[in-house]
Length: 150
Image (tube, rainbow, N blue to C red; front, side, top):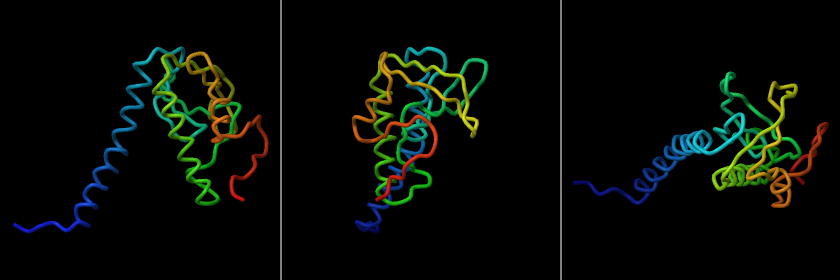
């Protein structure tokens, strides 16, 4: 029997972890959002630190932009630092949703990309101030956004 090299084992572990993260986290997010007490739409996926996918009664899946904050981009970052901070903001929002006992969203307007503009409340508190206090978001009320790269 042939022994596997340490590199081969590492690659197999990384591939397994990538698969688990790619399939496992979205499945957990969906289960968390639909099973947890919520009002209106259920958050089923965190796209990034300020965008979520929701399952809304009578509408199906809706993309929503969180009001009151702007987080670094992860899909088109201006620099590596922005990507890193954007991933941290995404993870923080995921963790906040998992730890919340009650999730509520309010808002009906849409932005120019067709996303619903919502205020997301976890256990009664708006999520935006907590993300800003953690240094993973900036206050945002519309208009031009500042860059995240120095």
